[in-house]
Image (cartoon, rainbow, N blue to C red; front, side, top):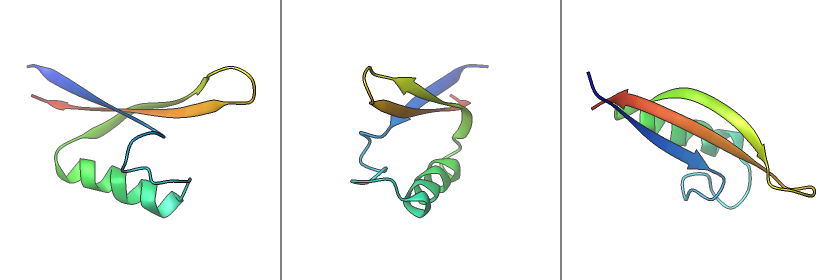
Length: 61
């Protein structure tokens, strides 16, 4: 069984211009309808006061 992965960050167009929980939920549900499942989520420190959320999706290829 092959698995493929997709990474979504705050720079992803599905995220929008600013954090909106409803918009993020819509994006996750849209990926889910294509067979993607959230594998993990993390906050990556980019230095200083800047953090970025990273969401990793996976599905069978």
